[in-house]
Image (cartoon, rainbow, N blue to C red; front, side):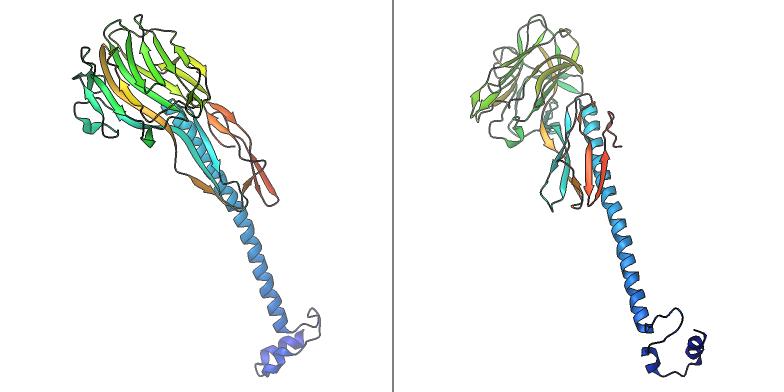
Length: 345
């Protein structure tokens, strides 16, 4: 080896020297070029290995972050809006990225009941008849009890945004002055929301069993009355598994129902029906339907073990269904769980 180093340091060796086989301790019969090639290949392989390890960790980190974000969004939306929310997974075929998004009820129309209709978030074509007075939030509409066209009316039969087949929320703020039989809201022939003379809320919701055939109506009646001359926030909710009513965020009646709502091309939404008008003020009428938020894609290298999990929060933001989340990347498996507060651990 000493002789080899001495010859390298002389600086006058011919180029042919570097192609000769050198026999000695630690060289083992390889040329310098062969040694350099082997070292280069080892460096490349080591770099690929480190890159694969980093990629593996990166893909799992991305998947975990996406799941954490969407689960948190579903939980926070359910708690803030008092509507059920779930996490939806699509694209389970091999080689395709799994798409994740929160599915939640969102407002598709909002009538603020101001004299200036530009404040409304609603399709054109709404007819509003009545007087405007100081309300709970700005102005409110007082229907004319002697005018059958008073209140709010809009044709919804052919509007895609008013597809309530998977679930809905009707939300109103009302202050009732009289103890009369009143119809707060009608939606075609499938929803009728009323108040009896004793100020108890009632609802009739008609689902369909398929093909436009009406099913047995679902009947609800509140267990507490409304207070006369006092503002109340009212909700009628169908979330795909049951129908319920709420007064000031308190559930007052509920019945199971997983059938879709019966809808026709002639449906009209009516607030304060002409035959049983509202005696009082109506403020902030909202209609909600199911919508899906922006989706995110989990890297295609990460898959679910045994199919996608089910994750759902109820209308209080509490975990209703929370399967274990098993992620698979090659021979590596990671199991995550959803806590009652919507955290991933």
